[in-house]
Amino acid sequence: MVKAYKQEHVYKHPWERVSAASWRKFSDPENKRILSHILEVDTLNRKLDTDTGKLHTTRALTIHAPGPWFLHRIIGQDICHCVESTVVDGKSRSMQLTTKNISLKKFIEVEERIRYDPHPENPSAWTVCSQETSIRIKPLSALASMAEKVEQKCAEKFMQNSVKGREVMERICRYMEAESAPV
Image (tube, rainbow, N blue to C red; front, side, top):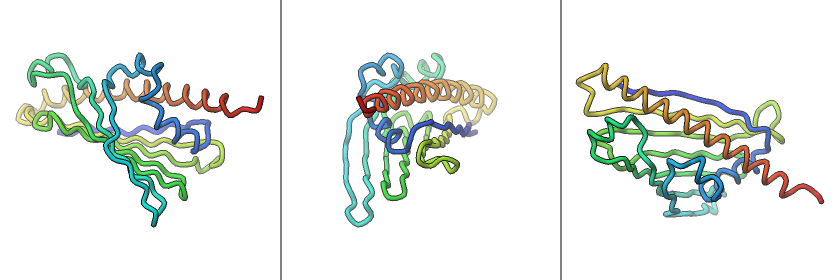
C-alpha cells in the first residue's frame, strides 16, 4: 500500500522572496518551536553549475519520525534521517526540492517533492507551491488494513507539518518584505 497526497498553496509573494524564505525556514530560531519535528539540518553539498546556472544543494535532515506511538515501539526509535536535494534554476525561476528518508527504510519509505514556481496568473507577485508526498509502510504489507491505517496516520502528521511549514514560510516572507521596504 502507498498513501500519496498532493497539495498546492499560493504565496502572495514573488518567487525570489519565497525561494529565499525556503532556505531560511529551518535556520530561523523562532521556527524551532513551530517546526519542532525538525531536529537538525546540515548542508552536505552545494554546487553552482556554471553551464546551466542551476544551484544544486544536498542537505541532511534529522527529524522526529512521523507516525503513531505504537509504530515507534515496533521499530524501536523515533528519529529518522533524510536527504533533501534541491535544484534552483534562477533563469526559469523554479525551485525543486526532493526529500527522502535514508533511515528506517525497511519499515517506511517517504518521498516528498516540493516545487516553487511563479504563479501563472500573477508571475511577478505570487508563487505557487506544489507538494506531493508518498508514504509506504513496508513490514505491514501483509496486513493491508493495518498498513493502510498507519500510512493514513503518517499522512495526517505530514499534512499537519505541511501547514506549519507554510505558516513559517509566510512569516519569513512577511519579515523579508518588511526588511526590504523603503524607510
